[in-house]
Image 1 (cartoon, helix red, strand yellow):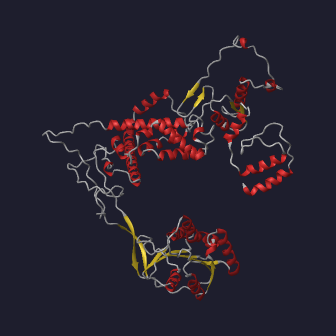
Image 2 (cartoon, one colour):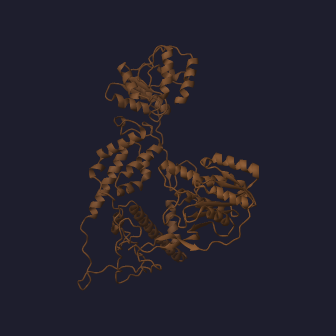
Image 3 (cartoon, one colour):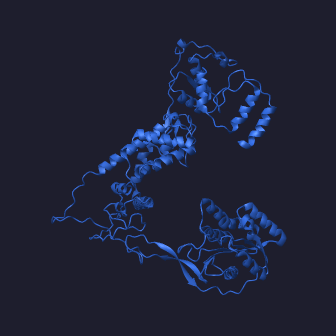
Amino acid sequence: MRPVRAPFADALERAAIAPPEIEVYANATGRPYPRDPAGVRALLAAQLEAPVDFVAQIRRMYEDGARTFVELGPKATLTGLVRRILGDEPHLAVGFDGAGGGVKGLWQALAALFSAGVQLDLPALFADRPCQRLDLRALAEGRAEAALPGGRIDGGRVRRSDDPVGLLGERQLLEHGAAPELEEALAGPGAGALDGPIAAYREHQETMRRFLSMQERVTTEFLLRLGGGADTAALAAPAASSSPAASSSPAASSAPAASPRGSLAAPLAAPADSSSPAALEAASAPAREADPAALEAPALRRTLATLVSRRTGYPEDMLGLDQDMEGELGIDSIKRIEIRETLLRQLPQPLAARLRSSMDRLSRIRSMNGLVDVVSGEALALGAGAASEGAPAAPPAVSPDGAPAAPPVASPAAPPDGAQAGVCPRFVLRAERRELHGAAPVRLDGLVLVTEDAMGLVARVCALLAQRGARPVVIPREALESPEEIARHVAAARREHGAARGIVHLASFHRGAVDGLGAFRRGNRVQGRSLFFTAQACAGELAAGEPLRIVAATLLGGGSGQDGLDGSASGAGCHGILRSVAQEHPRAVAKALGFDEALPHDAVASRILRRAAPRPGRRRGALRGGRAADGHVRRARAAR
């Protein structure tokens, strides 16, 4: 607000300000405004940069004899704050927009003031309105009993009996009276023809149920291991088919050794029924033990009050746990979501997952006490469920000869080549060397835009471009942080040399460690995003008939960072940008080249121009140790 203080003070000097006739309290100092107009102007101007001291303002007004506080405006947030500030001191705080607002809020506020002895001109409410006096004792005499309105309830809506019947589809809704007729139709002649389709549909539903159960288990497994706190031995393997036709192997397969905790390739144990509630409950075991006292209502209230205070700035002792968070505290929906998410992150994982499954119910809770009641209730229910699971298990089944009977185990499917049974295969990107493309040098003509690098490569590239007939124009490095500056340089080059025929992006050819978050963001803007904005400035050339050639050079080598990063990781974004360009403009020649430091700059510049030749089906490449390399996906060796 500092830049507007001087203009505001000038406007106050021109405004006519008279000495106040009643006490007006400033919300910055908490004291009444001065009596002289000059002091009023000075205090008004100073308040632009001063914080609001609402507590001092209310207490000073109370010390000066104010006992009735009336709030005019939306909601009733200040009314609630006044009640919290004054506490048990005798006072009356009324908001005219409380109790839902509107006429109801107005009438209730007037009723509260009138009951407190405030002098009101009540007849003014009925002036110019067609009102008549009523004898309250005679109201019930001669009044006929009103018939209760009838209603109809169906699967789509609730409506009055005299409302027209609306249709949700093309046909009438199925009502209770039509059920016997439907059963007779299904049991009549030709009903047996439905057995096959109905059976097939039921099988489909059962398949989908098992599929969703597996999806739930896999997602739970991934999230728990991602957090590093899951016990992989407690997670169950997919359940065997529940179809009567499912066959079982007479012998149990040997389980592979358990892999370290947190590995996504860890094998899963195979209990008899992984779709049972007990197995799913074991899969959601907490990653850390929680203090039971922290889940009790008093501790949750303290935690929630601290979260709300940090998010809103309200002092904790002024927060009423039964107040409406939106209507009385003024906490908007975004802040309420942030508060709920922060609270859930501080709870044990099974409890948080249980609460997230009923997020609709949480979003409808209006007060902090209501939220505490739900959380503590779910914690008690979860604890009771865990205690019931700890009961002694039933004795194992025995075979007729007295030996323990082995549970049937479904025979596993044959694993893919090179994979272990029960282990999720892992793939990595590896560079494979190949011979350099032996195409003849391509003659380039017209404007070629070159983004400046920080390693001195731009001069060599521009010299080679000029030798091959092109007109290179360098976009300086200091202009690459601003899309507007990039567009201005491209427009100026286009006015002088005509339409662009190519882009050579050298800004991503960069080496060096990133020192801090600010340097990382600047590196992203200069090395990666500048290529996007340069291509965006050439949208006309991309849409034209003549293909635009775009080449980006990085120091990421042929392994895309798999063998360590020779250069800045910010340049890796060029690959994705150019893939998008090639998808949207198939005629464009878009290639991202990853070099290592084995090549001198003269050789790098020469290979950049050689690779600018159009070659179908190739959008990225690399040069490692002076030789070309392509990335291929290969199965990784299993961990020992």
